[in-house]
Amino acid sequence: MENPLLLKNQICFPLYALSREVIQHYRPFLDELDLTYPQYLVLMILWESQPQTVNQLGEKLLLDSGTLTPLLKRLEAKGLLTRKRKAEDERVVEISLTEAGQAMRSRAEEIPAKLMDAMGFTVEEMVELKQIVDKLLAKSSRS
Amino acid sequence: MENPLLLKNQICFPLYALSREVIQHYRPFLDELDLTYPQYLVLMILWESQPQTVNQLGEKLLLDSGTLTPLLKRLEAKGLLTRKRKAEDERVVEISLTEAGQAMRSRAEEIPAKLMDAMGFTVEEMVELKQIVDKLLAKSSRS
DNA sequence: TCAAATTAAATTGTGTACAATATAATTTCA
DNA sequence: TGAAATTATATTGTACACAATTTAATTTGA
Image (cartoon, rainbow over all chains, first blue to last red; front, side, top):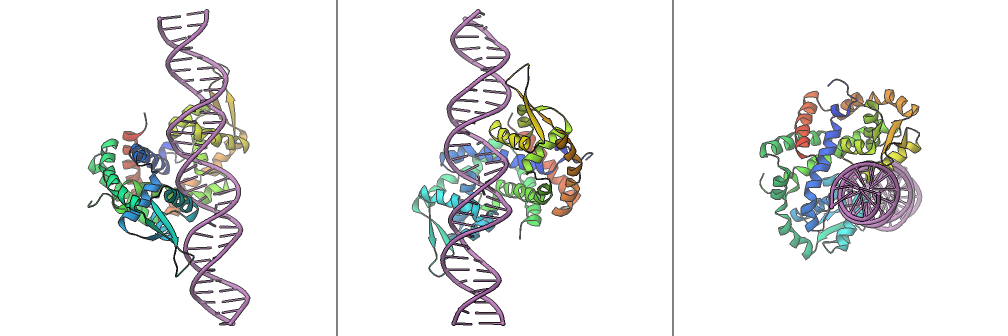
C-alpha cells in the first residue's frame, strides 16, 4: 500500500461500502415483510430465544437504547412484539414476540438462500469473508 | 452452517457490525478534526483529485445526492469546500477544496497509522480482509 | 437506613442512508 | 424546432446510529 490516504488503499471504506451493498441486496426480500435490516436482526434474535431485554439485544447487535428504543416501538406498532417492564425490576424492559412476530419466522426462513443467489457470491467467498470478519469483530468488539 | 437463520450464522451481520466498529475506532481521531467518517471520505477523494462533481463523489462512495447534498453543505458551512454550478452545464455542481480544506490534509495523514494501532489488527489480517472485501465489492457494486 | 452511586431505558439532537419525488437544465429526435 | 426524454442535483420523509443527557428504579456502603 503506497499512500495510505488514497481511498482505494483504505481498509475501512470497502468494508463500509460492502456492508451497505449487502444490506441493499436484502432490501427487496425484506420489503415483502415490511421490515428494515436492523428490524430483521432484532426478530432473528427473538426467534432464537425469547424474551430478551433491551440491554441483551443491544449487546448482541452492538446497538444502544438510542437506536433500539424507537426501532422496538416501531416493531411494537406493527404488532410483531411486545415491550413490558419486569415486575421484579421496573428498569428492565422485556421484549417478546407476538403471534404475528412468531409467524413471520417461516417467511423469513427463505431469505438467506435467496440472498446468496441474489449476490452471486460463491460459498467459498462467503466462508472466507465470514472467517476473517468474525475474527476481527471478536478482536474489536466493544467490551 | 447449520441453521442459516441464527444471527451467528449470518454473513451480513458481522460485516455490518465490523464496519460500525471500525468507524468507531476512527471517531476519536476524526473528532479532533471535527469530521464525521463520511465527511472524511469526501475530503480524501478531493485531496486526491479536484474538483469533483456531486455525481463523481456519489459513484466513488456509492452514495446518492440525498446523502451527499446535505453532507456537502455541512462541509461548505465549515469552510472546507465550495459548491459551484458549472457555467457550461448548470445542472452540474462542482466541489472544490478551500485553503482550509487543503490544509486539513496534513493533519489527516496521520490517521491511518493511528487507526491500525488503535484497532490492534495485524497487517496480515488487514490485507486478508481487504482482499476478500475488495473482491466481493467489485462483484456486487451497483453498476 | 438512607444518601450516593449505579443501572436500564428513554429522550434529545446531529448526521447519515436511501427511496421517492421534484425541479431545472440539457439532449434527442420526430 | 420544439415537445418528450434524459440527466444532475435538491428536497421530502422515514429510519437508523450514536453521543450526551435525563429519568426512574435499584443497589451499595458509611
